[in-house]
Length: 111
Image (cartoon, rainbow, N blue to C red; front, side, top):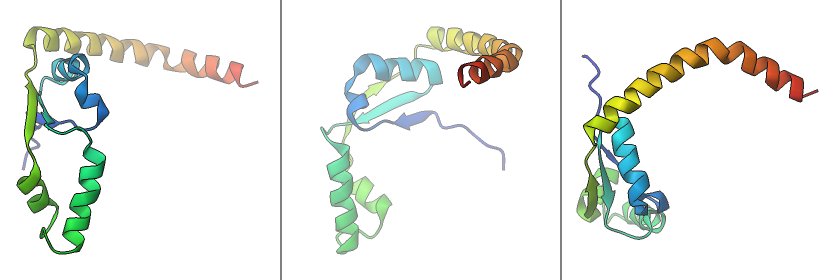
């Protein structure tokens, strides 16, 4: 079976509150980014694990599907995505050419 990349990612935690960061992530990855409608994912995660442990939820999937409430969704700006892809290709070429030099500089400063 051929690998098919996901077209949507879910982001949680404090970073998901930053609209600029979430839009940038959508633009760079070319994927829709969905954030949950909650303040603190860590405490919810702990509560869901406890719920699984005491039998409220059968497993992680059930806990997720019964409690997830979607928040804001960020659509990628495909013009930006194309530019980021071009920049990444330039970076890969530059990295390959400078990898040895970077290691030399690193070794020099470790002395």
